Image (cartoon, rainbow, N blue to C red):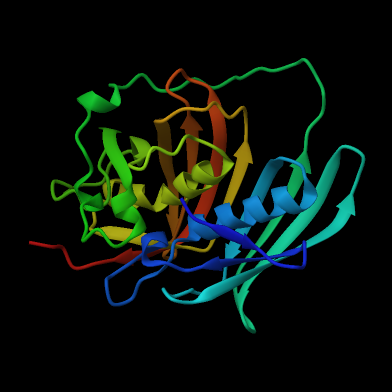
Length: 266
C-alpha cells in the first residue's frame, strides 16, 4: 500500500506523502490517518524485530501531498518477551502523529475467541459503497468497499437515525493480503458509520485510533463491524471489530472523532 524508506539511522524512517495515500477534498487532501498508523507500526516492527500487540495513535496535524514525513522510533523498554515503543511522525518541527505501542509474542499453546462474526452476505452479494467512487487520485480509489448492513457515509438514502451499526467488507483493489498494516488502515474507517447512525450527511475528523491485534489470517477480504456508540458535545465515539472471512477476529479498534456535518449533495 505504501513504501516506508529506511535511513542510515535504524530508528529513523521516512514516508513520501503521495496522493494515493491521502483523503479529503481534491484541493485539501491530506495523509489518511490510518496510513500514518500503519507506517508507524511497520517502523516499530522493523526497528524492534517483534510483532505489534497493540498501538494507539493521537492525530495532531495534517501532512499534505508532496511532503516527506519522518518517523522517529524510541524504545523506552525492551524486555525479554515484549518491547514498549513509540513513534513521532513529523515534518521538520511540525508534529503530525504520535503512536505508542507494545510489541512481542510468547510461545504459548492457548488460543481462543469469545466474539462471533455477524452473519451477513458474502461480498459479491453486497452493494458497493458509492462514497469510494472518486477521481482515482486518493486512497479511496484503491479500496473496494461492499456494504453488508447499515448505511455507509455518502449513501443518499440516509434520512433517519439508526442503531449505529455498520458492517462492510473491505479489500485492496491491488491484491494486497491482510496484514497488520492493512488492518490499521481499515481500522481508521470508524467514521464511515457516523452518517448512518445520526441520519445526517456527516463524517468525522479522528482524534485518535487504537488497534489491538488478534490472530491475523492471510486473506483478501476482511469484514469490518462498526458500532457508533455515543455523541456528546460534538464528539463521536465508536469501535470496530475486524474479521477474516472465516470468522477469525483479527483486530479490534476504537476511535473518538470530531463530528462534521456537510451540505448534502444533490
